Amino acid sequence: MEEKTEPITAVNLDHESNNAYADDRATASLLDRRITRTFDLHIIPWLFGVWLLAFIDRSNIGNARIDGLAEDLKLDGTKFNIALTVFYIPYVLIDVPSNWVVKYFGANHYLPGLLIAWGVVGMCTGFVKDYGGLLACRFFLGLCEGGLLGGIILYLSMFYRRHELLFRIGMIYCAAPLSGAFGGLLATGLARIHYGGYNRWPWIFIVEGVITVAYGLVTIWFLPPTPSHARFLTEAQREAAVHRMGLDAHGASQESKVESEKFSWHWVRMAVLNVNTAVLSLNFFAIITPLYSFSLFLPSIISNLGYKSVQAQLLTVPPNMAGFFAVILGTFLSDKIKARGPIVLGGCSVAIIGYIMLLIKTTPLVHYGGTFLVAVGVFPSPPAVMGWLANNLAPHYVRATGTGLQIAVANCAAFIATFTYLGKDKIDYTTGHFINVGMLVVSLCLSTTNILYVKWENRKRETGGRDYRLNGSDDGMLGYQHPSFRYTI
Image 1 (cartoon, one colour):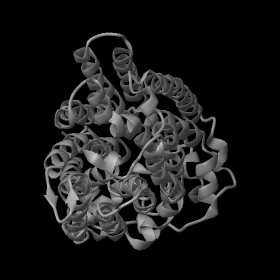
Image 2 (cartoon, rainbow, N blue to C red):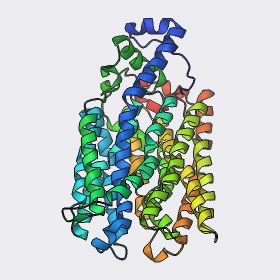
Image 3 (cartoon, rainbow, N blue to C red):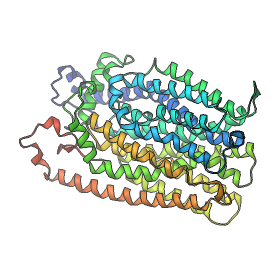
Image 4 (tube, helix red, strand yellow):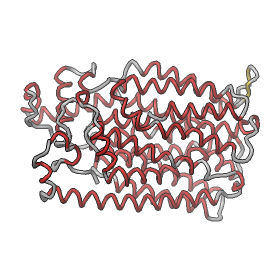
């Protein structure tokens, strides 16, 4: 399912070892596809598991709530919502600095290390006896998970070209809706355990935490640090992998290897001052509000339709599976057309229709059908927005800063999302649905704005309107401002 990319041909990158790779276009194209497939085999499955467990361990509190957590810890009023919110305070603050150190520690060690840490915290959540203990666990869970998503995006951008990237993000991000399906089934079984004085909900946290730690300990041995250090590639393939990333930079970086790039505050300023960073960070904020509230409260929404605990858990599976397939399809199409904005516009429109179905006075079956459209609409949009910004920022530390800032801004939406569905609105959750519709409309406006800006800027570069940047300046410090660099729509 590879997108059709232009074969890599010879360019002057001062690397004689790449000449053989570039001499024959057919050979180069075949080698390029082989490298991509090899990365898919050795990287994507591991990161898929990491993100699956991250979402399960983050949102399993929603499953635990309807299996006795709220009653045992006396979570009356807005206490449950506050517990959800506490998670996002460190989660937001850690994003940017975490992205800065990913390359220093090596993403192949750093990302599994985060996994192991939050797995331990997840296990501890199963042993809490009061509200204060729950708040402490949620805080440290957010601290450990905070650098993960930005780190994954940054890590993938070291291995894949810009218009190969989003489908790979999608293959990982589809674990989010799958976690809702799998987590619901897992919680249904674990909540039946009564052992050692711990009954029902504690076992959801304990068992899932053990699984997370074990997976992290295994993963740390298999992820490669960079393309030039991928042991599963031959020497020729490693050289070709480095070479193709240099071509894909289109002048934005003069370093052939990502590990050779050095941190500079110049790159930080470039990331912060990019129009894409501002617009797409706010866009992600708007999209993530319905995504988080949907993930956290879907069991409660379905339970409110009249279904009992076990039924409600099981009925979360089909909508989440629909979201799973929507992410794969949406990101695949996005890489095929080499555009991100249209996917976001389509996804938000479908989700709005789903929320309208939830708002109208009708049968529970229609309301349940609305959850499918919400899932199909909201789940493909976040990877599209993240991939959009990652495509439009270069080189490494600009991308690291921009994606970290985007995720930090976006996750502030959690302070809204965790209070969209309150106990006092339990009759129909009208307020929460209207908030989410409003956010999706904001996303439609921001996506349209960024599409128009990117088209305008690309036209300026194509007509020579940015060539003046090459006069009297160091080409190596231009990054995404280089006249040869083109933004993705």
